[in-house]
Amino acid sequence: GAVIGKRAVGAALTSRTGLSAQTSAESAAEADASARQGLHMLVQISTLLLVAAALAVAAALSATLWERRARLASLKIQGYHPGQLWRGLLLESGVMLGVGSVVGAIVGVYGHALAGHWLTITTGFPAPFSIGAAHVFLTLVLITAIALAVIALPGLVAARVPARLSLQE
Image (tube, rainbow, N blue to C red; front, top):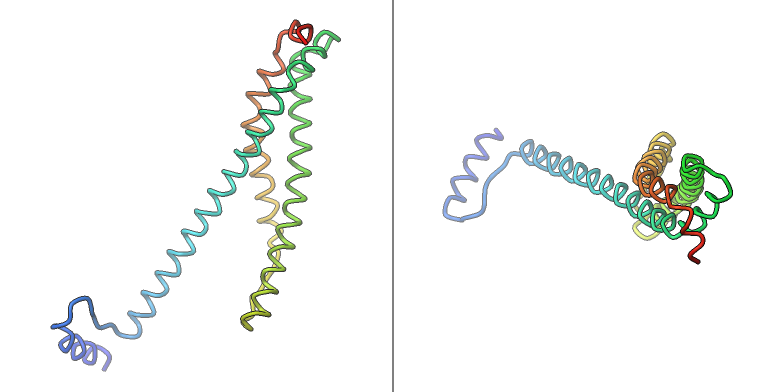
């Protein structure tokens, strides 16, 4: 049935370029493949955005650490060792990243819920929403880990600032 109909339609379309015949099963399989490819691209884009966000935050925190070298130098004069300063900088950065990530996750979940509600109201089509706590937690840990890894080197360099820098201000 379907194969005979496809052949008949295909024969009628031979004079038309760019047109082809498909059975409903082939059309459904093509639509499923296209949807899978679209979802795969969205996952790649979201991963890229997460890494870019973590790198942007790390760059901003690294610049902040670099600007505080004079203060770090004065702490060295007071007897702090570079290792202590570096661990303190990482702890401070970790706390800032943690608080910022948690607030960002809360606002993001709220925004997602609002957008889903707005879609339901405007289109009449239900937009189901659920919080994937494991996914949110993994995202928070990933962003914090990437940012701390990037901050570690500038923080180490800033912690090793010569003490004489504090005397230059």
